Amino acid sequence: MNSTYITLLAALIVNAVANILIKASTMYSEGNKLSCLMLNPYWISGVASFGIALILYTKALEHLELSLAYPIMTGGGFAIVVFFSWILFSENLSSHKILGYILVWIGILLLTRG
Image (cartoon, rainbow, N blue to C red):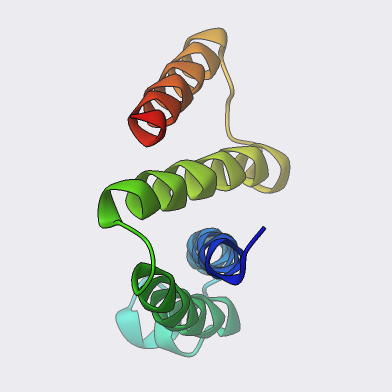
């Protein structure tokens, strides 16, 4: 695997982690005000992770076509977020949702192969 794809993989993992941290910040916040969220370590870490993911993604785009990189970025992040939402936040994974996720992944695979 060349370094460009490793950079893209790192970007998608860090982006997924950012989304998970932002969700965690809403669960462990001491109030509903934005000022409470901004002091929440999960929220701060999530925002920082988004920034790191953006830098990594930008670096990967220097050598990859956007029409290839974006489906990989979103599809990979999508899979990570779905899995950890189920594990960490006990989000429901019904058979309909699983089928939908599979169809989305098939679509992403078709797009990246063309």
